Image 1 (tube, rainbow, N blue to C red):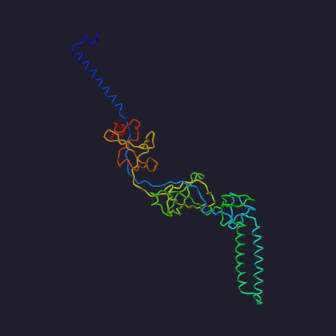
Image 2 (image 1 turned 30 degrees about the vertical axis):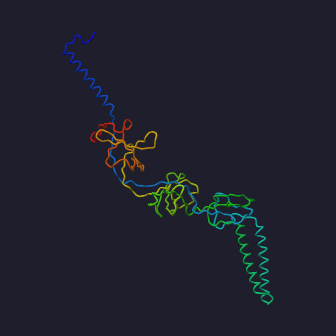
Image 3 (image 1 turned 90 degrees about the horizontal axis):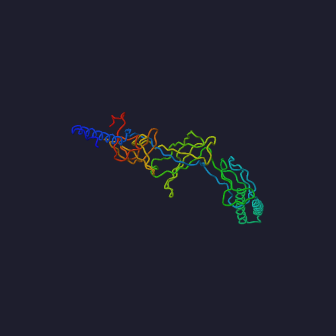
Length: 345
């Protein structure tokens, strides 16, 4: 039996109206619950410092390969990797058999030349013979001097031994016996600069350098050389950075980061909370808010700032951007602003 059987027509009508009102209210509440609650901020254009960061290893300012000009057997190597050497210091001695033979031949030529001079003075010789022996003597002296230079190898500069490729008793070959790196008073790093930045990088520009070995410490250097030709493989230009090295604190092979300041540029800046990464990709986007709905905008990031990001594209100056509540949003979705931001609607 229906519970409404004994109701008067008027009472039944009132009951149906009450039920309908309650259903509409429930639906309205559910719809309101589906609207995302967001927090907002405003994007502003400001002058953003521009810089570029590059990585490179420390290199010796100059590299000298110590090797004889002709193959010979090594008798002694007086230094090893890591040793400091001074200019003119004897580093390697090689077998002197050739030098001894050439010295004997040189002495014989000198005696013959002197005898030819004596004969010429007493009229028993000719000027032609003297001239011929003089030419032979000069050639023998040059050959002996060259052999001696390749028998005793000295350091052409002060520096540190960075490489050793042979041991005593070995025959010299294509590799240098030793490599000397000049690390005082300066060292260098070679960075690879892209074509877009090359136009603003000049010789003499100051740069800031940091090293993992000296955490928290900053070193100052200068751009000393810009390659006139592009590296075909990487499409970049090698740029040499020179920095002082007092106390030889910087050694070849140390890893460094070079930061070059490029002035400032006016770009849009948004709070870091406004930038969201798209799931499954490396794309970044920002939601904007206008008249109760949100819009999805893919953005290109520039520099990371203390409180936000520089944007190179995607958002305009004065746009209202969403900084909280993005999880429930989609392009064109409705949204409500937190009550404390009601004035920004």
